[in-house]
Length: 218
Image (cartoon, rainbow, N blue to C red; front, top):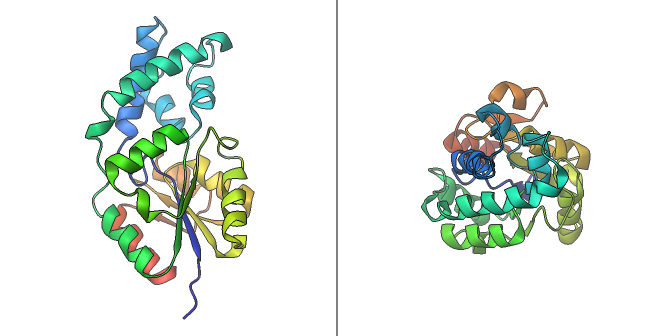
């Protein structure tokens, strides 16, 4: 039977790796370091998945633009001090292995920088499982469709056989903007109701539910 989706693209933080708490805490700590009122938990969660500078614009809207790099530097300091301890969600390794064995092309589209994703690939051991990836310092930030457009062009596949999986509305909006199907995961940064408002094909409560859906639908 032909595969419904030839190319499956995953977000990283909050979708494959349980890192949303570390991201929120690091943004808040960076703001406090510089004497800035830190964003609330809800606001900090909402910006996960965006490129760092775009994220800071949303998280700290009153911050002068010439201070973004200072906050970004402190954010990286706090995040890198804890990222070695971050873990993949339970079941992710098995899911990726199953999709690989089924013959899918796998990719990552992330708000991380290339350096950050390479580090995450190395720490998690998942790097060799993905055929390609796109990062926020190489493309427009989500929800711009550039990441997905470049990946589809690289693999020579059409939008109708491409699937984007992510834990934020930014991921699902990027999928819409690229004309591809989207699946949400409700165990990451954005609440289920926000994800479902973007009309994904499916919204998974955990990795096991995601794996079961992909087994039947992909």
